[in-house]
Image (cartoon, rainbow, N blue to C red; front, top):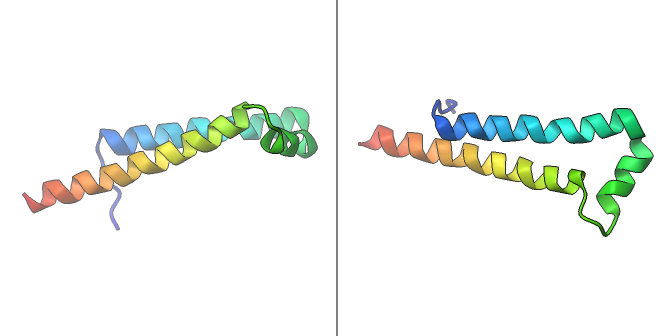
Length: 74
């Protein structure tokens, strides 16, 4: 499968990279015990939002492949 080179794939990769930075930064600053507490607590935390942003980035890359397939069929 070829990587689609359009704006959707660029933004998808951007969202994924920026979302991965938050948990890695918190692992370095707080340690794994606190980060697991952040993921399992009832409050809305940056780690939980980063999971959603990673999902959105994957969705954008999926759209990029669909758009590339649609353009190739034209």
